[in-house]
Length: 283
Image (cartoon, rainbow, N blue to C red; front, side, top):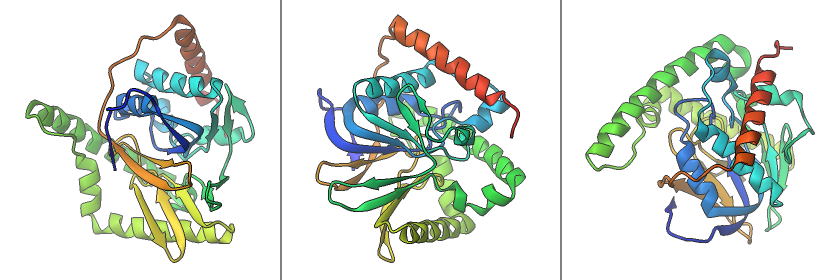
């Protein structure tokens, strides 16, 4: 389903699953994500990893207002009573040193067993644990990250051209990835391994991110859900009140909202905390 900014009141849902925002990357579509968060109000929000891109921030600090706005929007939702669980990924692995810690009402957990309204059990994790390149060849992972940056730079140029021509958003990097046979095979193997992990955990399904390929599918009796990303596809998964899971693609960016002085101060505090954590030597 494609999401559009047509309603005036937020749509109330049971759970939102969001991953791979990559705050700190120039490619992060914070405008689209903010618009999405304004249009959905959830009892629980589960952040499924790579929300902050620590890899890029360590190379070069980049934290524009849009990144602050996303953080403050999530903190505001926590203050209003939403439960927010943050499951770190490989790009924000620095948060794995803080399991069980609360930051402004946001809980940090390595993984989470989500019980849906229909009684199904979903194992929620980022998924990088099952990526051989990330686990065993960190240098190759970083090189792949740089290549991905180049593809995203091409995206930016193409997006500008398509806007001038009155065409919608199209992701070159997502298209290129799916043209490579090795990448397609990797996605298939990743899905099978993650689904097997859910089976061993006694779950009915698994919800993950990491590979930027949004899908809901049944794999050998296990419901496999990948939330996608907010760099290429701008996708999220919504659990409705009856436990139904829906994959949404958001294609609308809302107008910027005014920032209060309290929000601005909280944003500066968050930025100082984040930069301090990233500056720590690796354990």
